[in-house]
Length: 303
Length: 303
Image (cartoon, chains in turn green, orange):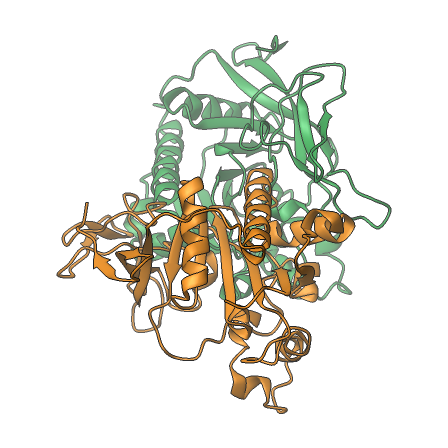
């Protein structure tokens, strides 16, 4: 394992996710808080104009602008395309980045607690995530199961991951999540520092990881209008098992729509405000236990 | 008391407050649900373009566009100014409106429960609010203490009021609040209907009303940047007493800022996402008991 030399903490990739933005402001005012002996840490405010307007983005979602082909496409010139190219200059180039670690701070209207979202099963990140979840029950770990190139900001470097906290409304500053996220960041930085020095705290032998399977949209009519709501029994139940037959949606005239899959899934991002336009009511995941020593995957029995 | 002949139910005065918008869509699909014997009910979607963009407004807050002088000012031509003039044609003219009742449906990121917000102490609305709060503990009643002309949509007619529900994030459809609001609307319509027929259910002899005193902004620096968050102990404590010395804000470096007033107040709209730009962190109210028979006001002791 190469040593970490530079780590970037990014906030406000979405302008209405205030937790990360105000943490970045705090770290800019008190840089000693994120200074560690063995590596350099610096901060970046992802989308300052969207923050000024208290919106997720101005023209398009910045956190979908980091495909290599788009970063090199000079015809893409929306505010976020240009911003992505600038961030790419600071953190990239993608695949050979100037930073070893990116911590991208997000918040969500869903009950994701303190989620660590990985782009792949990198052993170092798995160990870090295992350690974080072992000392804080609010920490959950998810991982994209896709092999496709990611368009997310975190994909600019190999050890890039998202910290996703909630539930908190868009454009709201929550002291509770501010403090919990801040503490998590210090734990992450301390872990990186001690890891550099060969004194990383021991990780547990296994970690529970929620691997994304598929996105599920709201029921819609032919004009694309939503025809049912997240069922009250499913709202805020992120990471809990959804068994075949369990209620999933509720139509406006009160009819239950059950989950009709064949196996139990673990939905996350249930009723995220920003995903209505993306056609995502929730994201199904598979819960798996990963042994850290041998790196084996053991499918867990639904509880 | 003149009979109610026409009532308007308005939703989506703010485009990212989905509860009211999807209720309006339901009532448009099933008009029998809001049909009552003794009066006509119709629906209105306040800001359709803002809803399309899932934003509070396009150019300016529609719910601040209903001052008489602005409604008659032909130089005001933003999207919301024009929309306000159109709504004024349908519901107005202000002071001599074509409707007897306006129920304007809003949602909030704050813990307002099912709030009925009155523009004044009209005896009929007080009785209605008293009845609603007597049968549902989630119903709270607030009233603007100001004599100034209101710029709110509800001010177009004498019996106009807001139903404000939450906490719910902006741009999120919550089945729980959808159902609770729907039930409240039917109770209101039934009350109006029975009142027209002289068979209104008896109201309690008194009603608790929270009268607005003043708005309180977040602590800010000279550049207008927020310097402290709502204290975790105050978050979601709308309608609860705030005593002198109680923590109100928390700075980013962890210092508590207490409430320094001389008397107990009852804050509402604590940490409303849409009010950051208005310089409002919360709104102080005074809790009063109004006797409905004599219409006396009795100041309540802080609990």
